[in-house]
Length: 416
Image (cartoon, rainbow, N blue to C red; front, side):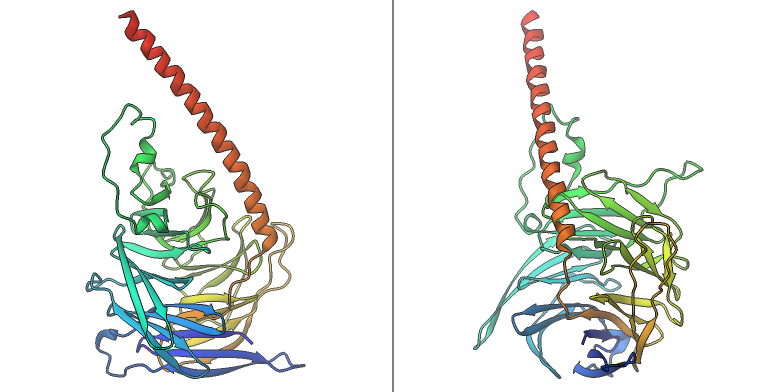
């Protein structure tokens, strides 16, 4: 029985359980308000912008980030939610918003559009709860921020902000003093351009047919699958131009695939990895929600009956949940892409159940722990091992070249 949490413009958090009667194809829903909203909410100051859920033993833990800069950490029961800790991000200014929220191993990460990154750790016991916080600064004009599956890295992108991957630990460390330029500055120019804590940064795509620069505007992103290496990731981004791009941080700085025109209206709003390996879901700023094949970027089917733009979506196993501007929470069925890329998709997803809410929902999150395809992770680990071997060989070759270069320099100076 899948369970989802939705947040709305008045600050309400609802628990929505979907169930299917035995021997019946019909789905039913049960809605419970676990965090009441505030009706007197000028300028939607208490609107929930991000939700994150984590399972801790037998407890469901939830964090909500709001438009006024506040964030609340809850312990959720069957019908109510108990406030464990609450804080406010003082660096969030008017006109800015939360672009990222994640929970991992008892740590809570928040990120705002102006680059205010915060790590909050809440220690719980029976008597009281204590917390500690660390902060960091990222570039501004961010549109989306995501934490990796194991929490070792995070990624962001935005308006004229290229997709970038950072080490989580280093991002909250004290920055090292700048070192003076050395003789190898040209050779290691790209590496030195990275900010402290940054491990990889994308490069803009090639100029268009008129040889004009393509604007950088990443509106959505996500990690595609877990990675055993902090330097090796597959990521997916959506752009304001309606393109979906796939990146392999090991292969190149530019995208290894750039699928154009998937978003039909206003660019890409959300991207979401599906349950199966080659399955992704994409929504735009219109009423379009598509399932696409990750192997070739082709749309394999779209969902009918949507009358509002999708504001947020998430998966629970093979089910997809979405919330939209028409005030509905929908539960969708999904079907994997065909065994071979390019073949016709016989089965298509549909809406199984929908729930009307009185207030426009802004975000949805699942309380299920994401399943990991172990066979895929094993393949990724094998590739990472091969990558480490090649990197070691390249470093050895570079060392040999540096030794030869220094030897030639000494001989030249001796000849003078």
